[in-house]
Length: 610
Ligand code: G6P
Image 1 (tube, rainbow, N blue to C red):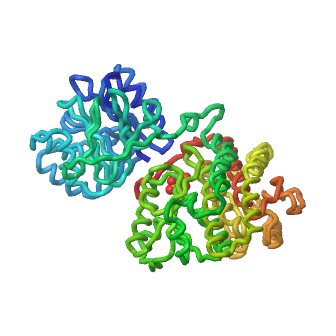
Image 2 (image 1 turned 90 degrees about the horizontal axis):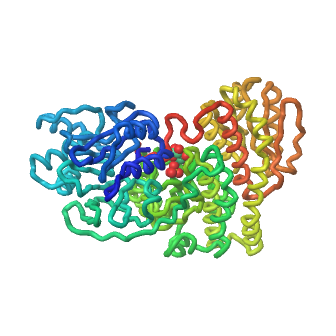
Image 3 (image 1 turned 90 degrees about the vertical axis):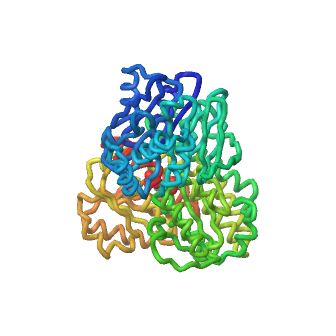
């Protein structure tokens, strides 16, 4: 969703802002803008559409300056218009960029109108610009103090960066609820909502925490709390690789990330193979916590939720521990019954999804004692709010449709399952060896699945012209059917639904005819014979079947039953391997439909609002 970048330097910062905004494009946005201190004015350039359009407009007026802020906006309050795009200004004096939502903006707007402020946008952000201006000009405070006082009057979630015409040597920032970091350079400093935005300028970063106010100057950065007391924060060295932020030889980030899975999995598995299924994988104190829990409650959104659904089968079957999985946005608003010793497990690629974060806080408020986070972004908000964490090592995931994050999350969940099983005396030494061996083989099996791409491309040709599709799976492969349907709808806009194959007769069979392709995930597992009967039910109604099986599933192909076989049966880790062909099917169908694969319409990579 929205992204922030800012810079103060002894050089022209416009290229830094533009590059930063381009690196934030992946989060999803619909307009972009910058505000630059040109020496005599704060000049704003905003455009609906791509950052490149805004960049061209800035070049046309030869915009330059040594202090500036930039923003990619994903519309929430007010439509997608240039007027609503950030930065927002007050009286040409103050310019603000903002991520998050100001909940009391109506009330503040009324108050500011009474004070004579005129609003030109429908956004909640414009309230911040006028409020800061009010304290700055009318209250006689300097910029940092004006931001501090204003931020105390804002409720909701925000990360803001503000500049002032009369103070060309400072940028003021505040953080509550939304990520914001400061990047430290030599004689120049930066701010960003996401480290990728500034990585080519510096890797030394300070993550702001709740209530922090940052005074960012060329020569240094001062951090204070909302009362003005100085605070210290650790300096981190970001290990995000530039290569992971660039396309290289690929056409799309999604394609790149699908193909990176053998490596992403190997990197994530490495930490498990190194130590075995030991609590230490999940951080200090894990041994004590994990040996006391009596259940697992998984909370997540989107693809991460489907990883959780897969894990439930493992946790109950292998570790014998009760497990519930719930969409975070549902859990956080219902009167759930707390089970204090049930471990809360949040799964989030970004570590900043608002609903997941709020669900975690809610679970804690209900009395759950412990929370573990599975996350791909170091130092992000959700792991920081958790007692235990395991980081997936997928590398930066840029494509909106999650791929390598999903399969690496499955590894983290499998490792959690086996660790709990071991602690509970349910994992024999022979089983442990078998599972470790299966993990070792997995990147190779995933590579074999990727090699099926040419066959899947042929299937995609048949899919591209369809309006609907049905995905079926059973048992641990049912969540893979859900994930396949989600991938297809996200990037091709084909309406796709997934069902547990056993539910076919209870409704979806009514939809089946020759226009409804049916994808079946059918490896050789305990439910194979049942899936075969489900396939007959579809066949009898004229439906065309696309079956993903493995080598020993013994399906006979016919005119309307197409089969692609993954080359090995990988037992308990089979859902990881079967995630690959459904990703490829969605990707190639999207290519044929000509959609914007990495930036599908209406979707965002990190959903930081409700
Ligand atoms: C968005 C993304 C999805 C992702 C979901 C949860 O909807 O487009 O790809 O699965 O958010 O994100 P998280 O970062 O919490 O895993």
